[in-house]
Amino acid sequence: MKYYRYILLFLLPTFSVHAQTIYKESEVDSAARPLGGLPLLEKFIDANRRMPYAAEVDQAKGSVILSGVVEPNGTVSEVKTLRSLRPDCDREAIRVFNAFKAWKPALKGGKPVRQELTFTVPFTSVELNAKPDRIIRYYDKKGVPVADEANSVYQFVTVVDSLGYPNAAPIIYRKSGKNWKEVERYQLNKEPFTYHNEDDPALPDSVEAYRLEIIDKMNTAQETHYSFFTDGSPLSKVTFRNGNHTQSSRFYYRNGLVRKMEEFVEDYKTHQWLWYPNGQLRQQAQRQSSPQTGPEFQVLSQWDSLGRPTVVNGAGQATFESRRSKSRFLESGAVKQGLKDGEWTGRRSDGYLEYRETYDMGKCLSGKFYAENGEVLTYTEPEIMPDFKGGRTALGRFLATTMRYPPEAARAKLQGRVFVSFVIDKEGNVENVKVLKGIGASADEEAVRVVKATSGQWIPGVERGRNVKVRFNLPINFELE
Image (cartoon, rainbow, N blue to C red; front, side, top):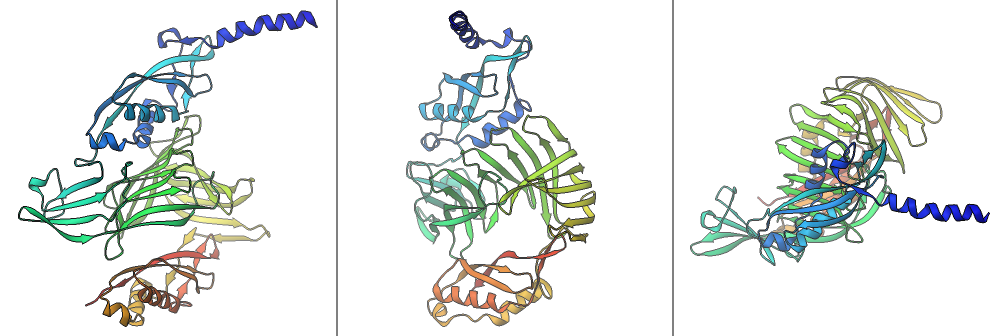
């Protein structure tokens, strides 16, 4: 035993020295690279890099050059600054580069080895008029953004904290000679809410969170809304204009990395990017929806967790992962021109086959749902949303004839939009009515009363041949003539 112990102690230091060898790119047979290629790493950096607010104020622009070591397990270590831009940008560059853990390691002699590399992280300011305590944006008389005060008619002022988050009600001013006159003051709300999770399998069905939201006098969403987990880490960042999503939205994993990013490229069209928790790009897709054509979702590209492409240019085998009924759920099948084509299946995390469907260029031809009691349901429409009997026109007519402007609200000249949440049950009745966002007690109570009065007048929603409960959000407008 003493002999073997001596040999083992002798070999350990030799192995340790070998494991610490760091090779240059020119010294390996196959260089380290990001899974999926360099463009995917650059997209990850672009989505996750957060411009420090102090750098935004100083209009900082430039790049941080980093060095690091790609490890045999696909992570990166020993990241440090080779060329600095400024300390806060240096720290952010190191943070975001360290977060990417989807590398194909270098190979030497057929074995993965450590390899050094350099990488550049660019920074540029977005806000043209950021001050230490506020952000000022200028607009012409048509509401089009302009660069400076000289060519503006309006200015929009948002008071912010040291991180750039709003902490007071934004104000719109109109130029009046050499002065600025306040024309509207928005409302800033900070409130807790329950985030209902449907697309992050790592999170439970619901998560407690809080949000910062900006609304105008009509209770319509404006500007950028932020939501956070209770520990302060980001949950989402969504920008609105007159209640509609605009620019880009980001949704985050619990580890602070972007899980999903949606870029609004033009009317009714959105580009969507999904990432794995290690930073590997998972999916690129496009969503298009218009009153004329309805919604259409196209998968442009997909990669597995090892960076291997499974869908290229809209063709291949696609997989969608979501969370349903407290468990992970997987849908898989072929896509052609980005649309479902051929057979698709839906399985729970335990492998149970829940449904099988046949598609032709995005149109469902037939489907079978396999209930746990052995019943098999057939259908041609996987999902049918609830509808008011007679359609939207009938719903609008019902609301207009049923709603009464509360005298108290009229005397106070109270106007705005009340957002009401409710559930349409399997029989078309209304339940669980509550105000999501109100304008005042009397108006809020009237909105709830009118929504409850629609009970029994709905055609229930259907999912794969079964009537199901569906939650609705409905805005009720209160406007004085």
